[in-house]
Every structure is written in C-alpha cells, then in structure tokens.
Image (cartoon, rainbow, N blue to C red; front, side, top):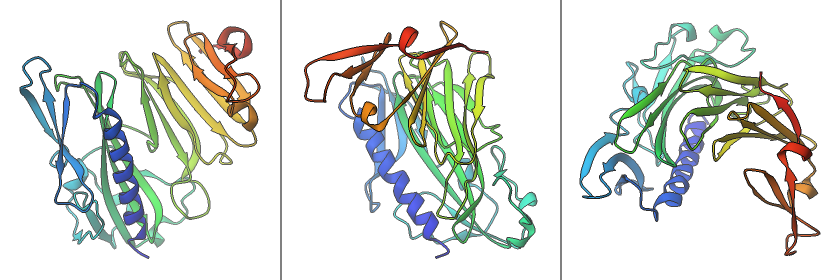
Length: 310
C-alpha cells in the first residue's frame, strides 16, 4: 500500500508520454527522442535537437540527468515501478517544513492539518517531455506522499525552442501544476491546479487556472473555483487559451489576448456531443446528429458571453 501511489502515477506518466510522443513521431520536426529500450516500457530519456536541413544533432538534453528531483539528499527506495528512471525517496522523521528541494517550492495540500503527524513520508520524482508546435516543453514534478495521500507538490517547467535554447524556466509556482498549455506563438502559458490528485477524499486544493504572459513574465489572468470542481482542463488553440470544466454542464472559456477578449459558454452533454471543431471565429457544431453533413457556427462574438480581460 505504501508504494501503490508511486506505481500508479508512474504508469500514468509512461502512458501519457507515449501518447504525447507518438502524436508527433510522424511529423518532420527538429526533435529526436532517445529511448531506453531496456526498460519494461520504452521511455524517452533524452532529446536531440536536430538541424532539419543537415540532419545533424545540434544539442542534446538529458531528461534524467537534468531532473532536479533526482538529486535529493535523502535515502533512496528501490523503485520497482516500470518507470525506474524516476527516483523514490524515504523521508522519515523530518518535519515537512524542513524538507528542502533544489528546484521550486514545496506547495502543501490545502487545509492540511497537523502536518507534524506525518512522520513516514515518500518523495517521488517524475518528468514529461512534450513537443508543442515549435516548442519543446519539459515538466519536472515532485510528489510528497504519506501512505498514498499527496501532501505536497513541486513543479518546474522548461520551455525550449527548436535550436535547443532554453527560453523560459518556470519554477516559482505557489500551486501545483496539473495540466498546461502554450499558445502557438509561445507567448502565453496556462496551467490548471488543484482538484483531486489521489484516492483520498477531498481535493489537494481548490481547482483553478492561471495564465502567464511569458514576454512580461507575469500572471495575466487567474481564476479559482470552489472545491466542488474536481478537475480543470486547459488547452491552446492557435494563439488562444482554452479552459474547461464540468459539474452539471460543461463550461468552456477562451482567451484571445490579441483582442483582449474572454469568451465563455455553458454546454449540455448533448450539445457537446455535436461539436465539430473550433475555428478562429467560433465553434462549429453539427445540426441534428454527428452523421449529418450540415453544421453551423456558434460565433465567439454573438453566441458566447463576451468580456473584456481585466
């Protein structure tokens, strides 16, 4: 039971990474993923930045060696999970507030009462690499758990261009980073936080999202919801940021910073099943059913709630 959370999260990250890489593997991109085929599940361990003209390797970034959470000064636990490149630590009889990390902030679970009662702690590191348009995004995460309950998180985000240049390093988060998105032009970075992170009752924190203007290096917009929301999702569309969640109905929010506009609309499950695709003007939905060859446009300007971004 003590290591079940590490195993489950490790397998989840392996599947997520495999899906992420496979989506890009057939495209001509200046990134080459280097895998460790000796593992139970092949996982990328490094990234080569490729000159698409000469096909020469420009730079190599080792995901494992550069993982800041693989260098902690705590006793290691023999990790039997398939994702064995990530280290697991035994952190016992150390006050949570005394735990030190080489990167980022250890963000504690909201409403965590009597943290001194947790004396048997496990620390686990994970990493994820994703090609997003013209950029490569590497996410490093550290989980602090006690018998499967997530007590704390720390996250670091690295954003590279196609030449292997580190454009941005984000590691001063005051929440966990659950999911992220980057606009096509690389200017706006959004991330969701909070919600349910483990099998224990109650969320890690209230769910919400933040949008960072990477050019200004400041938060452009943020919003937090009640703890009734279990998960916030965020994606990018062209140079727009998309945020969604559902309770009874589905709420979709889109941010167009070129127009300083925030668009939002609720959808029922039946309406959502008729979606065709988002365009720069709005959302195309099928008329009647998904087998129909007819569809209409729900305009951002007239069919969504429109607000000025403040």
